[in-house]
Each structure stands twice: as C-alpha cells, then as structure tokens.
Image (tube, rainbow, N blue to C red; front, side, top):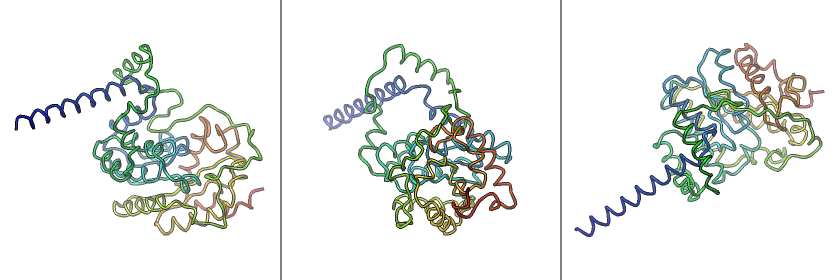
Length: 337
C-alpha cells in the first residue's frame, strides 16, 4: 500500500511539473500580440450579452466587423472566425458560445476551400485555440480523436521552435500581466485586417485545387466531414430557435476567373441552404461587386483588407434589413459585364 501511495505521489508531482512548465512556456513564448488572446478575453468579458455570431475561416475574420454591424442592426455581435477553421471546429465554437449567451442569429461564411478541404492537425488546432472553456476543449479533442492535435493542444512546448530571448519573454509577460489589448488593425470582437492592397498581379493565373469548383462533380466535392457538421450546425440552430444564414463573401475578379463553375457552386449551396432551413446570400453575385469591391479593397485575391471589411459589413447589414434581399443579386455569373 505504501508503495502504491509513493507511486501516486510521484505521478502527481510529475504531472504538476509538466503542467507548470507548459503554463510558463506558453506565458513566456506565446506573443502577447496574438489576436486570439485579446479575442478570448473579450468573449469572457461579454459573457451573457452576445446575440449574433459571425463564423468561418480567415475570409470571415476579415469581413464581418461587429462594431459596424451592431450599429446598423442594433445587436451585439462577435466574430468567431479563425484561419483555416474547419466546419467541425465552427460547430464546437458555436456550441460553447451559445451555452453562455442569448444568441439569436448565426452568419456562417462558406468558401470553396472550406467545403472541399480535409482538415489537418494544424487546421483543427486553429479552432481549438479559439475555444475558451476546458469542457468544450475536451469535447472537441474527443470528437476529433487526432493524436497530433491532442499533443499540440495539451503540450504547447511542442510548438515552440525557438525559445525567445529574455527581452522578448519579458515583453510578453509584462503586456499579459497588464492585459494590454492589440490595437493595430484589430477592430475588436474577433475582426482583424491587413493594410495590404492587392494590385491584380496574379491576373490570369488559375486557382489551386482547393479554390476551384468543378461543375461536373457538383456536390460530390464537398468534404464528408464538412457536410456532416454543416447539418449539425443547422440541427442545433433549429433546436435552439436560432436564425442561420450561409454566406459567400465577395472576392476579386481574378479569383472568380480561376474558380471554375461558380453557377454550379451557387446551385449546390442554395439547395443545401434550403435543405438546412437556412438563409442564403451569395455576394459573389452582388450586382455592384465589380464596381464596389475593387482590388484596392483586398489584401490578396480573396481576403478583405482594412478598407474592404468595414465596407462589406455596411452592405451586409443593408441586405439583412432589406425587404427584398434578392434585388441585390444576379441569378447567374454571366449577367456581369
């Protein structure tokens, strides 16, 4: 019995040492300028007040600016989007946030890549890092069942290639203790932006396979996991009486020219939204897209910059409040000049 107690004590001591080491490593090495640190802190402070969620990948993170949308819509919103966020991760972020807030509407931005891409350890990690509570972090890990994700999530030290110099570590610790907020190109509540301006230097180049929609394959291109969790999100929204909207964001003409059969994509996703009981807005078909969302509103072929995000947010609020949203959109891509 004594030997068992000694073993238990030693195991506990090792676990405490590992936990302490991981905490200190993360606290010293993870940059205080990381947007997620500020974003999660804001979500904690706003607990019990969030009514509208904006979800998706980096495209959504740079498109939906809650400060603009709230002023126009009279609501309290938060942007949960992260880079390369898999739809499974979106589902768990929604569940966690709805549990703590009176959410009434969810706007989920889709893209060709988010529908087609098979999630990896790194993309799963993007969503895990944005989860706030231990309960939902554990549920997410159990759902994914990926050894690489588990190790990367629980042992931050495995992600540190080089330990910073003392000056960098001191800066991180100082700013985290002060709870300094990131201000540069961060509009608060999850929105972030770039000051880059796309000049069209990639004009004429074809998109990669994850940004190309083959009309001959249609809905078969949607990843099985993505489709499963889109339906899970829709089922959850129905059960909680939450309005769900699926949204395609405006992109540059260069991106569209290399993206394949976008009319087929529109038909597939319109049918999917109808099947899910969700609203559907395809801003690639926005009638004034070429005139309003010019290259200087983007940092690259598809991500809004610091000027494009607020402009789109104004438009999105206008469309949501319109009595005839369809009047803003063409039915087919060929209708553009």
